[in-house]
Image 1 (cartoon, helix red, strand yellow):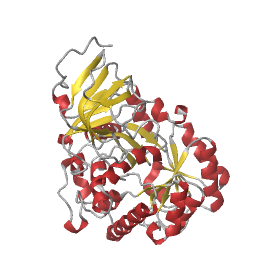
Image 2 (cartoon, one colour):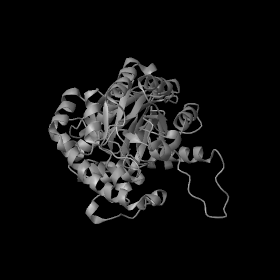
Image 3 (cartoon, helix red, strand yellow):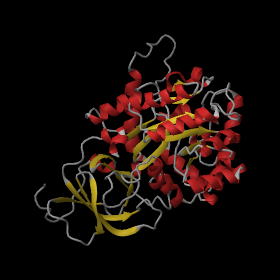
Image 4 (cartoon, one colour):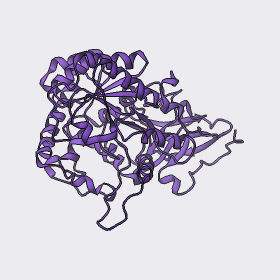
Length: 448
């Protein structure tokens, strides 16, 4: 079913050489304990073998000694809004020219690889920017993560359309809804996203009432599933969550009040519907910068994310974000206990590692948070057969890190600790690329 995923069709060329990654401590993405003394054979961009590193390097493969570093699946962020934010210019300075945003988006996508994020799901952006960037990556303009996009978010005619502009496709009535779904697929969407409720990030929408009627919501799911596409439901209030669950939508984005409805969590667990908690979105709107413990107050932001320390939002929304963080964390914990699959989604740019730390702080174990960022996130996207675990036959999207993320998850927020990133077997980022990736001693045979 690869034809269902433009993101897979748009993949860059896989590595031409075979690699024998040896001396690894393996976190395979399933939650199992680290496997010591592991070797991985990568060929044609695919993991061909997972073996003991005492085995001889296969003929024609290039040995790469990982020095007992941890090898794991590339991270997946299942909820981002990559759109190329252009800084505000000072009064009197030259205004940004048309097209400048695309360059900022390219820089942002490059940076994802430096943090070990090899797949992202863009849950709303401006116009065709994700598709344009993906096409540029496909044809070699630059390297960035595998990019899944919903195209435009399907919404009722609502205030959000005024706030978010070309991110939305407003539709009213079942026929218009079906047309909106088809339009997104026409322009290269990998999945469909629908607003079951309003967004708490603008002052004119309330997350409580359903934004679409029951027949309209049914039309979204029916049309998307009929054509082979998954549905992501923006669902904040409980009515929206209940409707999304009832209509079989595949992922529930946010769902911060679900802990109040154990029956809905039970239904999600039975149906295999995935919760994407998006804790970092609340942190951002509350002005908490890079803090992990909300009680500690705002952290010192890095240069690229300095604006995140002050979202510049009305006080009512900042206060609401603080409340929603408490509620969303409680819902994540309740979902865990109910057996609901949880996938990582940061909701802000370049915060995947921070989201892992925050999920741990708010109740997941490090292993559970890492599984949420690897296997479960891949499964939520419908890509579980391709990525998310280190297993034979999976795509060789892999990262190698200095340190143990099971005991020190914060290392995934530090590019200096990301030693090597492989995308379809091609070394694309990491500290090892400051110099040539070191080869192990001994004959490797001719390159194939």
